Image 1 (cartoon, helix red, strand yellow):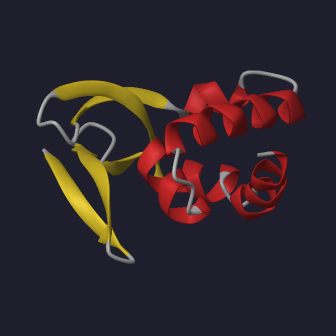
Image 2 (image 1 turned 90 degrees about the vertical axis):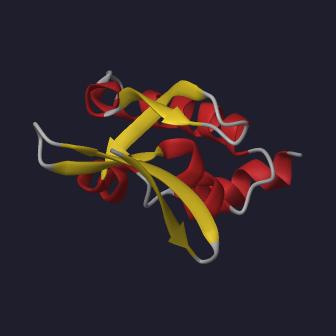
Image 3 (image 1 turned 120 degrees about the vertical axis):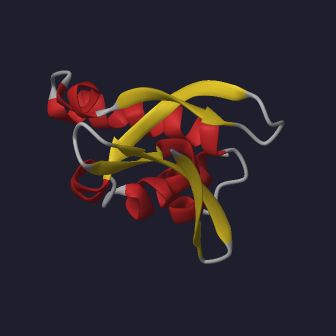
Length: 105
C-alpha cells in the first residue's frame, strides 16, 4: 500500500512491503527534504555518484530498490526507494554534500 508521509510539511512517498515487513521511502523525496534542494532529482543523481565513488563498490545499489509510487501528476512511476535503515546509514552525509553541491552552482 502506497501512502504519503509528512515530514516538516513536506510529502514523502512511501510503501509498506509485507514480505520484508518494512516501510520504503522515495529517496528523491527524502533527499529533497533533507537538502532543501529545489532540484532533488539532480541532487540525488550527484549524491548517488559521490556515495558510489566513496564506497568503491555497488554497496549502495544493493540496498536501493526501485518501486512504483504515485507521482505528483497522479501516474505510477518507478523511483529509487530505501528502507529506514538504509536511509539512516547512507544519508547522514546529505548536509555536508549539500554545502559542497550548492557552492558549485
